[in-house]
Length: 355
Image (tube, rainbow, N blue to C red):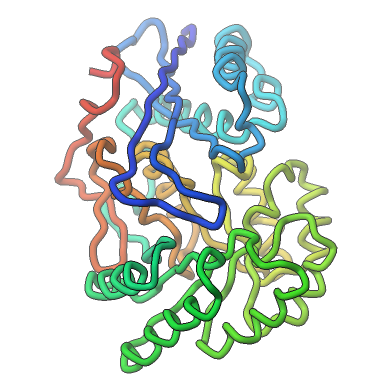
């Protein structure tokens, strides 16, 4: 059975003002990979390649040409993916991995046959995006009203005192409730001020903080030792591909946690290896989507469910877009689950072969 491939490009538009310390986003572009066997063209595996501008190592002007070349090699050879997809293309690897697994399971958006696809929920954090003080406080209240008990707040974009005011508000208003607070600085703290800010933030009983300083700085191992808040690595993992390099990085920095995003961190197999080397060193982890549509988010949720769920994961991004793909993914009471009563609706995707 000869494998056939195709791809198409789609732009999704945010339904709110999406801001991080790296800037404002109004839309997100993804390339969708399709694979099928020539003797059964109606059974199609679908995967999403969505590099993040300014962050992904494969955010490059010739991305589409590189994707096309990888898909051509996929149809021309029976070699493993490592031979088909060169290093430095994590979002392409994730999209092709997902499409092949989907095809293997019948082209029904089943990537792994596990508890998630049967309806078992995964706890997730509620993400609070950067904004002015009032909008962030409103987001916090709304997340808690919706049943989230783990709140993740992006910091580094406001005046630091105002960000502390937000944390004070949460702790004073919701002191009777068991609310876990995570922070994500996206590398926004300057090296000379990072430890001071971490000590100030620790007053608000913070579970963890992602990437307080930019990746690659020599200060990070010492910061992980001295910080009163457990530090989680995110951007630091980008571009680290070999098993030996993963081990070297984790043993050098010794973070409390790592945050894994298949689109950024090498695809599903690479994340599997990250989990292995982290757990061998008693380093915690959780999965986070990287602004994928529901196609990519579904794959990450199913991958996550292959492991015991010890902590809330960052998988609540399915409601970011006005024009997302209709899916069985449902968020309720701080959990995401696959509603087996719902069907996939691919009308929002712009390629006729899928319908």
